Amino acid sequence: MSISLHRLPAGDESRWAVCQDGEWGVLDGTLADLLAVPLNQARRAVEAAAREAGGGMPGRQTLPPVDRQEVWAAGVTYLRSRDGRKEESGHGSLYDDVYDSDRPEIFFKASPWRVVGDHDAVGIRADSGWDVPEAEIGLVLNAAGEIFGYTLANDMSSRSIEGENPLYLPQAKIYDRSCAIGPAIVPSWAVDPGPFPIGLRVLRDGREVFTGTTSTSEMARTFDDLAGWLFRALSFPAGVVLLTGTGVVPDADFTTHPGDTIEITSPALGTLTNPVIAIGDATAGKEKP
Image 1: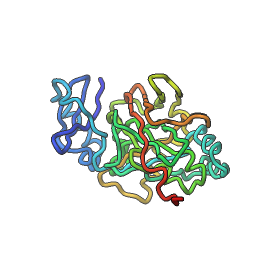
Image 2: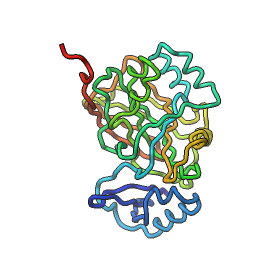
Image 3: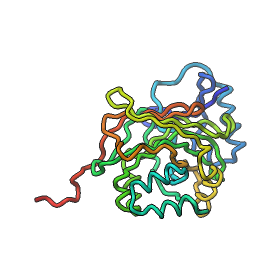
């Protein structure tokens, strides 16, 4: 039995629906409502909607599966990520320290209104010449820090900007269309807790120009450990999405181009597909001759 939560357009607003084995039912309330209550109570609400499911998908379009949730992210949680950061930076020892330390790297990624969903365009900064997708598992955490569900995520990143100086990480990571999540949320009680295999493909003019795979079994930290650190001094009354880092980092000679298509997949969570566009002005802030 498969079950997933989807956010769908409803006029000028949105609604949440449950899909169980291809049958759809409307959920009473929002994701924020589900994440504000204990996990067992949220589960009862989802399962009640699933029992009423019948018929096809209401509409053809889905929205990013967040409503009031911030998105945060963890970095350098895989050995390949540590090595990739060292490749791009003159501050390699910094990433060794982060990878080996008790305290993880956790940073703010996106406000909910900046998140894009399945088949929406993700962006690469126009003032960056080296840009990559980062295929990740996203933890959907409730207000108590419990794992309500899992989703796929793309933490787009400018390697050239972060490589120039690690203090530029917010500019490398946080900009319009830099965060994609979807296509849906799979509840934690409906799927094995991992490890999750993760695949990444980049297509250019219909041709595969990059492919890579990893598994969350390669993570240096556990999901619960990352969630615990996020909640140490922060509260999230409407819940939060925490991206758990990437284990697929293309070699230094690869960069994403506008017009590419990025596919991130994991069998239990589906496939997240996004075309790529350029964001911003490459000349902004530069002196004119």
